[in-house]
Image (cartoon, rainbow, N blue to C red; front, side, top):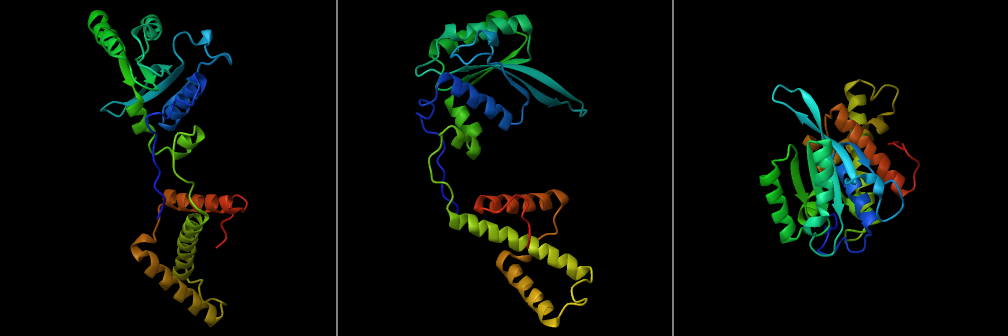
Length: 253
């Protein structure tokens, strides 16, 4: 059984600097599948005049009902505050959005917007009727979006729970070894190669081993696989063996 991993807690971002939080947002957007994600960090300083009001620019693919595709441009402003983000911290991005007209803007907040800031956004929408969408991702949304991104959470020390044990890794390696061996065995069997110039005791041993694999995993869980599934299974075995010390692409069975 895999260990339980606990996602970010309520103080999870406090140990990050503002730059590290921006980098987390950049990595998260990439993990979520957005396109052309551009972190506009022009200097190593805590503030960068080169970002012109938006920390990250990315594109989101949209598909119409007629299946035609197009991309929307979004501006992102990352706000790493220990207290509620005030209204004045939002104005810079909205000003640049008015000038450059993206399809949308997102404020990604490590904590929460203050109530005055939330009121400011609602008033801004009613008064200006902006031609772009406005979204806010506060900490609960960040927790939801990154919950299954284990490698991302570990990179920024945002997750508690042990790394999987060697025992669990070995069990997984054995499972994918068995499944790949079984699939190759079936190909040899159906192709008429099992038995050709093969000693009888080896053939009987292979057939007996195949039955044990079927009993262990259930025959319905042993293929046939699509090309994609076959690639994933081989990739998993290769990765598990690499973690255990083998070279990459070690797929002998």
